[in-house]
Figure 1 (cartoon, one colour):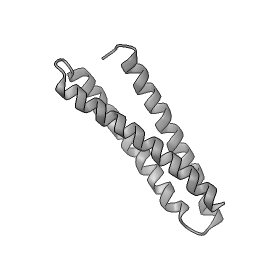
Figure 2 (tube, rainbow, N blue to C red):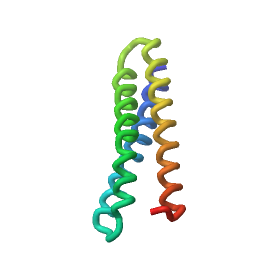
Figure 3 (spheres, rainbow, N blue to C red):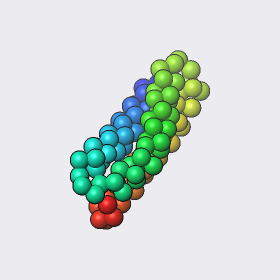
Length: 102
């Protein structure tokens, strides 16, 4: 059970870090681009979501390193939920930018 919890939480951390990295990249580009202020404001609104999901998934990773099977279940639930939320937030961010709104 411990290996499954570790793998789930590692994938979740990667998803959350990917979302945070994508927002960092968008912020960097928006700062350099003339007229990028609306995009920068949008990114600033999304950063707390990325930070929260990254924090939750890191907590799940920390919990998964324990020896208790019940805590592994908690880690899987936290990691799975945080990873799912990160992926959905990343997809919605990409849709907004690919749709030409910014």
